[in-house]
Length: 371
Ligand SMILES: *Cc1c(COP(=O)(O)O)cnc(C)c1O
Image 1 (cartoon, helix red, strand yellow):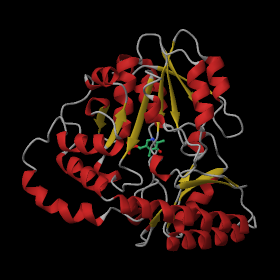
Image 2 (image 1 turned 135 degrees about the vertical axis):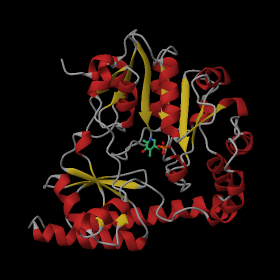
Image 3 (image 1 turned 180 degrees about the vertical axis):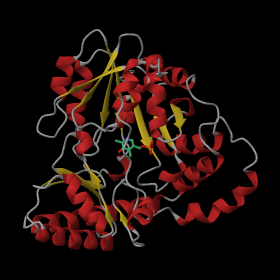
Image 4 (image 1 turned 45 degrees about the vertical axis):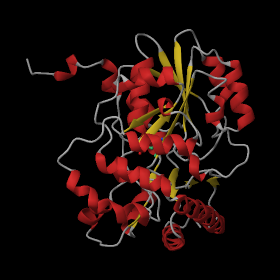
């Protein structure tokens, strides 16, 4: 009989469709033989990393032979000060996905399950299935999270709800009032994980200030990241914020050296340059306007976004547009993995990136006679 290792894994692992990341520039160069690509595919900061970070990293290379600080003391102190939370309320991860994995692993097991919204960030499903945990998708309301439907779907087996706020790839967000009402209606036996990867980009006044809710809601866990506005996606640093008793348990599932030394130093330096973050947010707003105007001029609909990306609807399959744009040096993200076959997602770029993207898009649409 042929050896079949599938017999030995948790059956949910067999349902995992591996994550399809944004196509790296080097891969596009190899495959297409073009040299110039603009990557608008992974919601990275188009302005790169703060020079305050990059200028100070070289002197850390002498430390590479040593293990990093397992407790990430300096970074935690800096975050604690920046966020006005106790050090004991922080858990660091190799990207916030690592934190999400630890959170699921810690609190959801046996026949308990997780609820997420339709169109929720696809990583949740992959993480849960890999850990052998059931995860159920609750239909969205148009493209927004339907909190009432999620509440109605909870059972005694529901242990956790994961909510991306704002959600990637739809860009919709839940406001403070609705979120509070949701928490009030929910049993505190169900954890609410609020994934705020785009927190820094949010300018809306009614966005939930979740840190100040931790006092009233012990079942709340917040995750954030240095991968987006802070421009450090390549170094993999994210964090969670919760009650100390919650953090202490999650920390038991943490690999002792999960944040590398350079990542710890870089994240601390990145926190020190809030000017860079402010400028990135401002330019993101301008870019959002520029792209929205351009898309409207081309007659394309899109989902109004509260992040640094826009999901664009198109008559052609999003995958075809992706290929066409790629041929012209623009990397975007098809949204078929979200069953949004007629959508693709553009990360808001620099003003030049946005201009180039709109120009190529116009060319593609003319060729396909959609415009
Ligand atoms: C990009 C993103 C993350 C960040 O992942 P990291 O592991 O911190 O790089 C988390 N959640 C959502 C919704 C995202 O879009």
